[in-house]
Structures are given as C-alpha cells and as structure tokens.
Length: 328
Image (tube, rainbow, N blue to C red; front, side):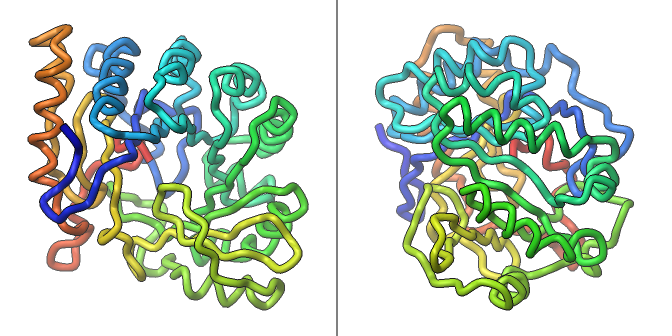
C-alpha cells in the first residue's frame, strides 16, 4: 500500500501535532484566552508513535513534529527517540517557538534530528513580546545558539510578516539569518481561526512584496533547493543561507502537495485549508494493536484529499480552527 491521492500526488510527508498547548499566545495563531483540549482527547505518545509507524510503512519518509509548542509536551523526548529509530524514516524534524530549545537541543540531536524550524517574527525585544503576548526573545536566540552547538545541522527561521506590526523587521531578520548561517522562510498569514488583534486584509504582505524589499539589500537568485515542504527558495549571492517564501494566497503550492497532518486529537487532516478529516484516534482506541486496519483507513482517506485549499468562502474565512490545533 502506498499513499497516493485522487490527483496522482504521492504523500511522503507527515506533520504530527503532539499538543495544542503553547507557552506563547502569538497574535496570528491564538486567542489571548485559549481553551485547550482536555488531556484525554489528546493522543498519547504511544498512539502518536503507532501512527508514525503506520505512515512510514505506507511510504512516508519525513515526519515533522509540531504543536502548539511540541516541547511543552511531557516526556516528548521519548517520542523523538522512538520515532527517530524507525528505519524506514529518512528525516525527523521539528517546528518550535524556540523557548525551550536550550533544554532539549542535545536530546534532539541524539535522536537524529538534523534540521529544525524556529518561529521568529522579529528581533526587536519589545515587539517580540507584543506579538507573542509575553515571550522573551533572548530565550529563543540562546536556544538557536545552543541547538547549533548541540550539532543540529540546519536551522530555518519561520517569520509571519504583518504590515503594521513587523514589516520593518524583514531586512533585520535576513541580516541575522545570513550572519548566523541560518535559512529563513517568510510566510503569508493563513486565515485560520477568528483573530481580534488585527484585520487580516489590512495586515497582509505578499511574498512578491517581501522579495522586492529583500532585493533592495541582497541579490537573490531562484533556487531549485527542496526540503519536502511548501517553501520556494532563493539563494543569496555569497552566502549559504536560503530565503524561502510560503505563499498560500498569492502563489499556492497545492499542485505539488505531498503532505498530510495529524492533529493533537488524532484527526488525519487532509488539507490545511479544508475541514476533511478522519479520526485515527477513534480507530486506534477501538482496535488497539491492529496496525493493518489503521493503515487501510489512512489509505482510504487519500481519496478524499482535495485538489486545493479553500481558506475563504463568500469572502469570509472558512476555517474556524486556530493554527495551534492544526499542527503548523
């Protein structure tokens, strides 16, 4: 059995959320007063590992662990250790806000994690606290240094740019990435959940606009570099750093989509911009130990993977779930 959808796209990449909880409340990701899932509704680590095993037996080669903030999950090191030992898996990666990276970096490196993504939208300490609602930027910057020292080979920054909040930080972020041998991707804000901090239309910055801004300082060249994710990369003359752009609005990547998500509560989400899903947790808990049935349900679900995302319907956001419940 292999994972191929109705449009001939082979699914080789799983994004696994291990928690909807986070120690930040970023303004584009969460409401300030969040109500999180009861713990009984969240996949156990053992169930998450079983799902990873099933996906790798179906041809998935890359698994990214996400949240919420995955490093707030109790005993998360156990998951990295066991999933990292799956022989059929080519790559185990992580997306984190970096707040706890100093603590976990050695354990991640020992588990075989070679690449991580760190969410960082500004280098201004006051602005960082405003965007995260109470985070401290020095925790993240120290975490990045400690991850490099621990042997994490490649670190990529992820930055969501909002026109009236942090557009002034784009060049500074690229400067920081180049100076520290990091990659960086700029992400168009995705309309997930109802936010009250800002109007999404007035804050929107397209990838093309950001690329033009960066080009005032750096010479960019199109790159054929691929990491298995949605970033389209550009190289910088004289630097090993890569600049990526994730453009769900202005230049969507649906035609080459190779990924699915499993949410913290065990739903197989077939597309970030649609609500189609299959409850894998229900299958695991009703038929414990039956991996072949689990795999068949995953294969069957692929026929429902949509051709493209639909973030809006009648000019209104269609998706009411926040990004933290989706898994990045």
